[in-house]
Image (cartoon, rainbow, N blue to C red; front, top):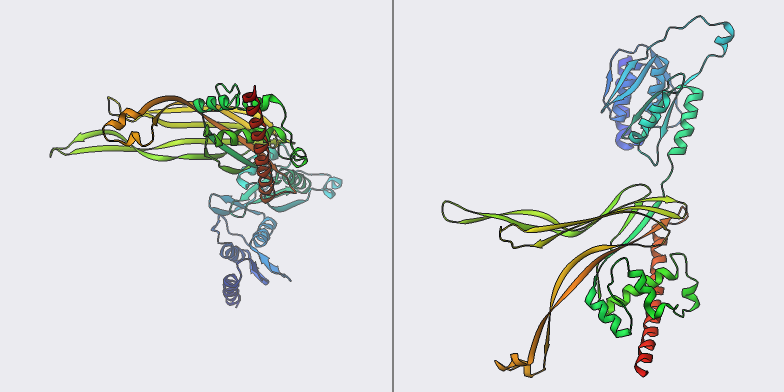
Length: 457
Protein backbone atom coordinates (compact mmCIF):
# COMPACT_ATOMS: atom_id res chain seq x y z
CA UNK A 1 0.00 0.00 0.00
CA UNK A 2 2.79 2.40 0.90
CA UNK A 3 4.52 1.68 -2.41
CA UNK A 4 1.31 2.54 -4.30
CA UNK A 5 1.01 5.87 -2.43
CA UNK A 6 4.68 6.62 -3.21
CA UNK A 7 4.18 5.93 -6.93
CA UNK A 8 1.06 8.14 -6.99
CA UNK A 9 3.12 10.90 -5.31
CA UNK A 10 5.80 10.63 -8.01
CA UNK A 11 3.14 10.83 -10.76
CA UNK A 12 1.60 13.93 -9.13
CA UNK A 13 5.01 15.53 -8.82
CA UNK A 14 5.73 14.86 -12.48
CA UNK A 15 2.41 16.50 -13.46
CA UNK A 16 3.14 19.46 -11.16
CA UNK A 17 6.63 19.91 -12.60
CA UNK A 18 5.25 19.82 -16.13
CA UNK A 19 2.71 22.53 -15.28
CA UNK A 20 4.92 24.67 -13.08
CA UNK A 21 8.69 24.26 -12.93
CA UNK A 22 9.12 26.73 -10.07
CA UNK A 23 6.76 25.66 -7.19
CA UNK A 24 5.66 22.18 -6.04
CA UNK A 25 2.76 21.23 -3.74
CA UNK A 26 4.02 18.41 -1.57
CA UNK A 27 2.69 16.70 1.59
CA UNK A 28 3.56 13.21 2.81
CA UNK A 29 3.14 10.90 5.78
CA UNK A 30 5.28 7.94 6.80
CA UNK A 31 7.65 8.46 3.84
CA UNK A 32 11.07 6.80 4.01
CA UNK A 33 14.17 9.00 3.78
CA UNK A 34 15.31 7.05 0.69
CA UNK A 35 12.03 7.90 -1.04
CA UNK A 36 12.47 11.59 -0.09
CA UNK A 37 15.96 11.50 -1.65
CA UNK A 38 14.48 10.00 -4.83
CA UNK A 39 11.78 12.72 -4.96
CA UNK A 40 14.36 15.48 -4.42
CA UNK A 41 16.57 14.07 -7.19
CA UNK A 42 13.62 14.02 -9.58
CA UNK A 43 12.45 17.56 -8.74
CA UNK A 44 15.89 19.24 -8.71
CA UNK A 45 17.13 17.16 -11.69
CA UNK A 46 20.34 16.38 -9.78
CA UNK A 47 22.05 12.98 -9.48
CA UNK A 48 22.35 11.95 -5.83
CA UNK A 49 24.79 9.22 -4.74
CA UNK A 50 23.94 7.39 -1.48
CA UNK A 51 27.10 6.08 0.20
CA UNK A 52 25.22 4.43 3.09
CA UNK A 53 21.52 3.76 3.28
CA UNK A 54 19.61 6.17 5.51
CA UNK A 55 17.07 4.49 7.78
CA UNK A 56 13.93 6.06 9.12
CA UNK A 57 10.69 7.72 8.00
CA UNK A 58 9.48 11.31 7.93
CA UNK A 59 6.21 13.24 7.82
CA UNK A 60 5.80 16.65 6.25
CA UNK A 61 2.76 18.95 6.14
CA UNK A 62 2.94 22.11 4.04
CA UNK A 63 0.29 24.82 3.50
CA UNK A 64 2.17 26.48 0.63
CA UNK A 65 4.09 25.30 -2.46
CA UNK A 66 7.84 24.66 -2.24
CA UNK A 67 10.48 25.62 -4.81
CA UNK A 68 13.51 23.48 -5.69
CA UNK A 69 15.80 25.27 -3.23
CA UNK A 70 13.35 24.83 -0.34
CA UNK A 71 12.94 21.12 -1.12
CA UNK A 72 16.73 20.71 -1.17
CA UNK A 73 16.95 22.53 2.18
CA UNK A 74 14.28 20.22 3.60
CA UNK A 75 16.29 17.14 2.56
CA UNK A 76 19.46 18.60 4.17
CA UNK A 77 17.63 19.13 7.48
CA UNK A 78 16.22 15.59 7.43
CA UNK A 79 19.65 14.10 6.68
CA UNK A 80 21.24 16.25 9.37
CA UNK A 81 18.71 14.92 11.90
CA UNK A 82 19.69 11.38 10.87
CA UNK A 83 23.43 12.20 11.28
CA UNK A 84 23.99 12.42 7.52
CA UNK A 85 25.09 15.29 5.28
CA UNK A 86 24.54 16.23 1.63
CA UNK A 87 27.75 17.41 -0.07
CA UNK A 88 28.58 18.39 -3.64
CA UNK A 89 31.21 16.40 -5.52
CA UNK A 90 31.57 17.78 -9.05
CA UNK A 91 28.19 17.36 -10.75
CA UNK A 92 27.01 14.85 -8.13
CA UNK A 93 25.38 15.31 -4.73
CA UNK A 94 26.53 12.70 -2.19
CA UNK A 95 24.79 11.53 0.98
CA UNK A 96 27.50 10.74 3.52
CA UNK A 97 27.36 9.92 7.24
CA UNK A 98 28.59 12.53 9.70
CA UNK A 99 31.62 11.53 11.75
CA UNK A 100 30.61 11.24 15.36
CA UNK A 101 33.07 12.63 17.84
CA UNK A 102 33.50 10.89 21.19
CA UNK A 103 31.83 12.88 23.90
CA UNK A 104 33.69 13.33 27.11
CA UNK A 105 31.92 13.26 30.41
CA UNK A 106 30.77 16.82 31.02
CA UNK A 107 29.33 18.31 34.16
CA UNK A 108 25.52 18.61 34.17
CA UNK A 109 25.74 22.40 34.15
CA UNK A 110 27.77 22.28 30.92
CA UNK A 111 25.33 19.82 29.29
CA UNK A 112 22.49 22.28 29.80
CA UNK A 113 24.22 24.91 27.67
CA UNK A 114 25.27 22.53 24.87
CA UNK A 115 25.77 24.11 21.43
CA UNK A 116 22.84 24.21 18.97
CA UNK A 117 23.62 23.16 15.40
CA UNK A 118 21.70 24.66 12.47
CA UNK A 119 21.67 24.41 8.67
CA UNK A 120 21.35 27.47 6.45
CA UNK A 121 21.13 27.99 2.69
CA UNK A 122 22.09 31.42 1.33
CA UNK A 123 21.07 32.51 -2.16
CA UNK A 124 23.82 34.75 -3.56
CA UNK A 125 22.84 37.70 -5.76
CA UNK A 126 25.96 39.52 -6.96
CA UNK A 127 28.89 37.14 -6.53
CA UNK A 128 29.41 33.57 -7.78
CA UNK A 129 29.39 30.80 -5.20
CA UNK A 130 32.58 29.22 -6.57
CA UNK A 131 34.35 32.57 -6.05
CA UNK A 132 33.14 32.98 -2.47
CA UNK A 133 33.55 29.38 -1.26
CA UNK A 134 37.40 29.48 -0.93
CA UNK A 135 37.14 32.60 1.24
CA UNK A 136 34.57 31.03 3.57
CA UNK A 137 36.47 27.73 3.80
CA UNK A 138 39.73 29.50 4.68
CA UNK A 139 37.85 31.51 7.29
CA UNK A 140 36.02 28.51 8.80
CA UNK A 141 39.26 26.87 9.99
CA UNK A 142 39.56 29.62 12.63
CA UNK A 143 36.21 28.69 14.20
CA UNK A 144 36.21 26.31 17.16
CA UNK A 145 33.50 23.96 15.82
CA UNK A 146 34.71 23.95 12.18
CA UNK A 147 31.41 24.67 10.36
CA UNK A 148 30.59 22.68 7.21
CA UNK A 149 30.56 24.78 4.01
CA UNK A 150 29.48 23.70 0.51
CA UNK A 151 27.80 25.23 -2.53
CA UNK A 152 25.35 24.50 -5.37
CA UNK A 153 26.73 26.18 -8.49
CA UNK A 154 23.67 26.03 -10.77
CA UNK A 155 21.43 27.82 -8.25
CA UNK A 156 24.34 29.95 -6.95
CA UNK A 157 23.67 28.95 -3.33
CA UNK A 158 25.88 28.41 -0.28
CA UNK A 159 25.12 25.62 2.20
CA UNK A 160 26.24 26.15 5.81
CA UNK A 161 25.95 23.74 8.74
CA UNK A 162 27.34 24.03 12.23
CA UNK A 163 27.13 25.97 15.47
CA UNK A 164 24.34 28.55 15.39
CA UNK A 165 26.46 31.51 16.47
CA UNK A 166 29.23 30.67 14.00
CA UNK A 167 26.78 30.18 11.11
CA UNK A 168 25.08 33.51 11.87
CA UNK A 169 28.45 35.28 11.98
CA UNK A 170 29.46 33.78 8.62
CA UNK A 171 26.06 34.74 7.17
CA UNK A 172 26.52 38.37 8.19
CA UNK A 173 29.98 38.37 6.60
CA UNK A 174 28.53 36.98 3.34
CA UNK A 175 25.92 39.77 3.27
CA UNK A 176 28.71 42.35 3.44
CA UNK A 177 30.64 40.66 0.62
CA UNK A 178 27.66 39.91 -1.65
CA UNK A 179 26.98 43.51 -2.66
CA UNK A 180 26.12 45.12 -5.98
CA UNK A 181 29.20 46.32 -7.85
CA UNK A 182 29.51 49.79 -9.33
CA UNK A 183 29.29 50.04 -13.11
CA UNK A 184 31.48 52.33 -15.22
CA UNK A 185 30.59 53.47 -18.74
CA UNK A 186 33.82 53.91 -20.72
CA UNK A 187 33.96 55.90 -23.97
CA UNK A 188 36.98 55.64 -26.24
CA UNK A 189 38.00 57.76 -29.20
CA UNK A 190 40.60 56.35 -31.56
CA UNK A 191 41.89 59.14 -33.78
CA UNK A 192 44.72 59.76 -36.27
CA UNK A 193 46.35 63.22 -36.38
CA UNK A 194 48.32 64.40 -39.44
CA UNK A 195 51.46 66.35 -38.53
CA UNK A 196 51.60 68.21 -41.87
CA UNK A 197 47.93 69.21 -41.89
CA UNK A 198 48.12 70.34 -38.28
CA UNK A 199 50.99 72.68 -39.14
CA UNK A 200 48.94 74.04 -42.03
CA UNK A 201 46.08 74.68 -39.63
CA UNK A 202 48.46 76.61 -37.37
CA UNK A 203 49.56 78.77 -40.30
CA UNK A 204 45.95 79.39 -41.28
CA UNK A 205 45.00 80.87 -37.91
CA UNK A 206 48.42 82.22 -36.91
CA UNK A 207 49.08 79.56 -34.29
CA UNK A 208 52.30 77.77 -33.47
CA UNK A 209 50.75 74.31 -33.70
CA UNK A 210 54.05 72.50 -34.12
CA UNK A 211 54.21 68.77 -33.68
CA UNK A 212 50.89 67.56 -32.35
CA UNK A 213 50.60 64.21 -30.59
CA UNK A 214 48.58 62.74 -27.79
CA UNK A 215 50.69 64.33 -25.08
CA UNK A 216 50.39 67.80 -26.64
CA UNK A 217 46.70 67.67 -27.55
CA UNK A 218 45.70 69.49 -24.36
CA UNK A 219 48.51 72.02 -24.97
CA UNK A 220 47.23 72.71 -28.46
CA UNK A 221 43.70 73.13 -27.09
CA UNK A 222 44.92 75.75 -24.62
CA UNK A 223 46.95 77.56 -27.33
CA UNK A 224 43.83 78.25 -29.35
CA UNK A 225 42.79 81.89 -28.99
CA UNK A 226 46.24 82.52 -27.38
CA UNK A 227 45.26 80.63 -24.26
CA UNK A 228 42.47 83.07 -23.44
CA UNK A 229 39.12 81.71 -22.39
CA UNK A 230 36.35 81.72 -24.96
CA UNK A 231 33.34 83.86 -24.09
CA UNK A 232 30.59 81.33 -23.40
CA UNK A 233 26.92 81.71 -22.64
CA UNK A 234 25.59 80.76 -19.21
CA UNK A 235 24.30 77.38 -20.47
CA UNK A 236 27.84 76.17 -21.22
CA UNK A 237 29.46 77.80 -18.20
CA UNK A 238 27.03 76.20 -15.79
CA UNK A 239 27.19 72.71 -17.30
CA UNK A 240 29.86 70.93 -15.27
CA UNK A 241 28.62 67.42 -14.32
CA UNK A 242 30.70 65.64 -16.99
CA UNK A 243 34.01 67.42 -16.83
CA UNK A 244 33.33 71.11 -17.39
CA UNK A 245 35.11 73.57 -19.67
CA UNK A 246 38.41 71.63 -19.96
CA UNK A 247 36.63 68.64 -21.47
CA UNK A 248 34.63 70.95 -23.74
CA UNK A 249 37.87 72.56 -24.94
CA UNK A 250 39.34 69.16 -25.79
CA UNK A 251 36.22 68.11 -27.68
CA UNK A 252 36.11 71.42 -29.57
CA UNK A 253 39.78 71.01 -30.56
CA UNK A 254 39.08 67.56 -31.98
CA UNK A 255 36.08 68.94 -33.91
CA UNK A 256 38.17 71.81 -35.30
CA UNK A 257 40.98 69.48 -36.43
CA UNK A 258 38.43 67.15 -38.02
CA UNK A 259 36.75 69.97 -39.98
CA UNK A 260 40.15 71.03 -41.35
CA UNK A 261 41.00 67.41 -42.32
CA UNK A 262 43.94 67.36 -39.90
CA UNK A 263 42.30 64.64 -37.83
CA UNK A 264 40.39 61.48 -38.66
CA UNK A 265 38.25 59.60 -36.17
CA UNK A 266 38.92 55.89 -36.75
CA UNK A 267 36.43 54.57 -34.23
CA UNK A 268 34.39 55.64 -31.19
CA UNK A 269 33.66 52.42 -29.27
CA UNK A 270 32.07 52.36 -25.83
CA UNK A 271 31.81 49.62 -23.25
CA UNK A 272 30.02 49.05 -19.95
CA UNK A 273 32.47 47.83 -17.28
CA UNK A 274 32.07 46.43 -13.78
CA UNK A 275 34.22 47.70 -10.94
CA UNK A 276 37.55 45.85 -10.70
CA UNK A 277 36.79 43.65 -13.75
CA UNK A 278 38.74 43.65 -17.05
CA UNK A 279 36.88 44.71 -20.20
CA UNK A 280 38.33 44.87 -23.70
CA UNK A 281 37.60 46.47 -27.06
CA UNK A 282 38.99 45.29 -30.40
CA UNK A 283 38.92 47.46 -33.53
CA UNK A 284 40.41 45.89 -36.62
CA UNK A 285 40.12 43.12 -39.17
CA UNK A 286 41.44 39.67 -39.99
CA UNK A 287 43.65 39.50 -43.07
CA UNK A 288 45.05 36.63 -45.11
CA UNK A 289 48.84 37.02 -45.24
CA UNK A 290 50.87 35.09 -47.76
CA UNK A 291 53.61 33.13 -46.03
CA UNK A 292 55.15 31.16 -48.93
CA UNK A 293 54.73 29.40 -52.25
CA UNK A 294 55.43 25.85 -53.40
CA UNK A 295 55.55 24.28 -56.85
CA UNK A 296 53.77 20.96 -57.22
CA UNK A 297 55.01 18.05 -59.32
CA UNK A 298 52.64 19.15 -62.07
CA UNK A 299 54.23 22.60 -62.24
CA UNK A 300 51.39 24.40 -60.48
CA UNK A 301 52.17 27.11 -57.92
CA UNK A 302 50.46 26.68 -54.54
CA UNK A 303 50.44 29.65 -52.17
CA UNK A 304 50.06 29.24 -48.40
CA UNK A 305 48.36 31.86 -46.25
CA UNK A 306 47.81 32.51 -42.57
CA UNK A 307 44.99 34.53 -40.99
CA UNK A 308 46.21 37.34 -38.73
CA UNK A 309 44.33 39.90 -36.65
CA UNK A 310 45.34 43.40 -37.72
CA UNK A 311 44.08 46.24 -35.56
CA UNK A 312 43.94 47.83 -32.12
CA UNK A 313 43.07 46.03 -28.89
CA UNK A 314 42.21 48.11 -25.83
CA UNK A 315 41.90 46.54 -22.38
CA UNK A 316 40.57 48.54 -19.41
CA UNK A 317 40.25 47.57 -15.74
CA UNK A 318 38.55 50.33 -13.70
CA UNK A 319 38.56 50.58 -9.91
CA UNK A 320 36.24 53.11 -8.28
CA UNK A 321 37.20 54.99 -5.12
CA UNK A 322 34.72 57.73 -4.28
CA UNK A 323 34.59 60.14 -7.22
CA UNK A 324 37.93 58.93 -8.60
CA UNK A 325 38.65 56.04 -10.93
CA UNK A 326 41.93 54.11 -11.13
CA UNK A 327 42.37 52.82 -14.70
CA UNK A 328 44.68 49.96 -15.67
CA UNK A 329 45.02 50.39 -19.43
CA UNK A 330 46.71 48.12 -21.96
CA UNK A 331 46.83 48.98 -25.66
CA UNK A 332 48.19 46.74 -28.42
CA UNK A 333 48.52 47.85 -32.05
CA UNK A 334 49.27 45.20 -34.69
CA UNK A 335 49.77 46.06 -38.36
CA UNK A 336 51.61 45.05 -41.54
CA UNK A 337 54.70 47.18 -42.14
CA UNK A 338 55.76 45.69 -45.47
CA UNK A 339 53.65 43.21 -47.40
CA UNK A 340 56.31 42.49 -50.06
CA UNK A 341 59.87 41.67 -49.02
CA UNK A 342 62.81 39.88 -50.61
CA UNK A 343 62.09 36.76 -48.54
CA UNK A 344 58.46 36.75 -49.62
CA UNK A 345 57.25 36.93 -46.00
CA UNK A 346 55.51 40.11 -44.82
CA UNK A 347 56.97 42.24 -42.04
CA UNK A 348 54.52 42.92 -39.22
CA UNK A 349 54.78 45.38 -36.36
CA UNK A 350 53.42 45.35 -32.84
CA UNK A 351 53.30 48.29 -30.43
CA UNK A 352 52.09 48.15 -26.84
CA UNK A 353 51.26 50.72 -24.19
CA UNK A 354 50.63 49.78 -20.54
CA UNK A 355 49.80 52.46 -18.01
CA UNK A 356 47.92 53.20 -14.80
CA UNK A 357 46.11 56.51 -14.31
CA UNK A 358 43.85 58.06 -11.68
CA UNK A 359 41.17 60.39 -13.05
CA UNK A 360 38.02 61.99 -11.74
CA UNK A 361 34.58 61.04 -13.02
CA UNK A 362 34.22 62.38 -16.58
CA UNK A 363 37.90 63.27 -17.10
CA UNK A 364 39.86 61.94 -20.08
CA UNK A 365 43.08 59.96 -20.36
CA UNK A 366 45.06 60.51 -23.58
CA UNK A 367 47.42 57.81 -24.86
CA UNK A 368 49.82 58.65 -27.70
CA UNK A 369 53.20 57.73 -29.12
CA UNK A 370 51.93 55.29 -31.76
CA UNK A 371 53.37 56.89 -34.90
CA UNK A 372 53.51 55.65 -38.48
CA UNK A 373 54.94 57.22 -41.65
CA UNK A 374 52.74 57.97 -44.63
CA UNK A 375 53.41 59.29 -48.13
CA UNK A 376 50.62 61.25 -49.85
CA UNK A 377 50.60 62.21 -53.52
CA UNK A 378 49.30 65.71 -54.37
CA UNK A 379 48.57 66.84 -57.93
CA UNK A 380 48.31 70.54 -58.94
CA UNK A 381 46.93 71.24 -62.42
CA UNK A 382 45.66 74.07 -64.60
CA UNK A 383 41.98 73.57 -65.44
CA UNK A 384 41.17 72.63 -69.05
CA UNK A 385 44.82 72.89 -70.18
CA UNK A 386 45.82 69.85 -68.14
CA UNK A 387 43.24 67.77 -70.05
CA UNK A 388 44.90 68.34 -73.45
CA UNK A 389 46.32 65.06 -74.79
CA UNK A 390 50.13 64.78 -74.74
CA UNK A 391 50.64 68.50 -73.89
CA UNK A 392 48.42 68.31 -70.80
CA UNK A 393 51.22 66.90 -68.69
CA UNK A 394 53.06 70.23 -69.04
CA UNK A 395 50.29 71.86 -67.01
CA UNK A 396 50.35 69.30 -64.18
CA UNK A 397 52.64 69.02 -61.18
CA UNK A 398 52.69 65.91 -58.98
CA UNK A 399 54.50 65.98 -55.64
CA UNK A 400 54.97 63.44 -52.86
CA UNK A 401 54.33 64.67 -49.34
CA UNK A 402 55.87 62.80 -46.40
CA UNK A 403 53.65 62.85 -43.38
CA UNK A 404 53.64 61.36 -39.88
CA UNK A 405 50.38 60.03 -38.52
CA UNK A 406 49.96 60.02 -34.72
CA UNK A 407 47.51 57.43 -33.44
CA UNK A 408 45.89 58.84 -30.29
CA UNK A 409 43.48 57.07 -27.93
CA UNK A 410 41.25 59.13 -25.64
CA UNK A 411 39.53 57.22 -22.82
CA UNK A 412 36.81 58.84 -20.71
CA UNK A 413 35.13 56.90 -17.85
CA UNK A 414 31.77 57.79 -16.27
CA UNK A 415 30.58 56.29 -12.97
CA UNK A 416 26.99 55.02 -12.96
CA UNK A 417 25.78 55.71 -9.42
CA UNK A 418 23.06 53.71 -7.63
CA UNK A 419 20.36 56.31 -8.42
CA UNK A 420 21.36 56.41 -12.12
CA UNK A 421 21.30 54.05 -15.09
CA UNK A 422 22.94 53.78 -18.50
CA UNK A 423 20.11 55.72 -20.19
CA UNK A 424 20.68 58.65 -17.82
CA UNK A 425 24.40 58.77 -18.67
CA UNK A 426 23.73 58.59 -22.41
CA UNK A 427 21.17 61.39 -22.22
CA UNK A 428 23.67 63.55 -20.33
CA UNK A 429 26.35 62.79 -22.93
CA UNK A 430 23.95 63.81 -25.71
CA UNK A 431 23.37 67.14 -23.96
CA UNK A 432 27.11 67.51 -23.49
CA UNK A 433 27.69 66.86 -27.21
CA UNK A 434 25.33 69.72 -28.13
CA UNK A 435 27.20 72.06 -25.80
CA UNK A 436 30.48 70.87 -27.28
CA UNK A 437 29.25 71.90 -30.75
CA UNK A 438 28.34 75.33 -29.35
CA UNK A 439 31.81 75.63 -27.87
CA UNK A 440 33.33 74.62 -31.22
CA UNK A 441 31.40 77.37 -33.02
CA UNK A 442 32.42 79.92 -30.40
CA UNK A 443 36.04 78.84 -30.84
CA UNK A 444 35.84 79.14 -34.64
CA UNK A 445 34.34 82.63 -34.36
CA UNK A 446 37.17 83.69 -32.02
CA UNK A 447 39.83 82.30 -34.39
CA UNK A 448 38.25 83.99 -37.43
CA UNK A 449 38.26 87.30 -35.57
CA UNK A 450 41.93 86.75 -34.75
CA UNK A 451 42.66 85.91 -38.40
CA UNK A 452 41.00 89.14 -39.62
CA UNK A 453 42.94 91.13 -37.03
CA UNK A 454 46.24 89.72 -38.33
CA UNK A 455 45.34 90.63 -41.92
CA UNK A 456 44.47 94.24 -41.02
CA UNK A 457 47.91 94.80 -39.47
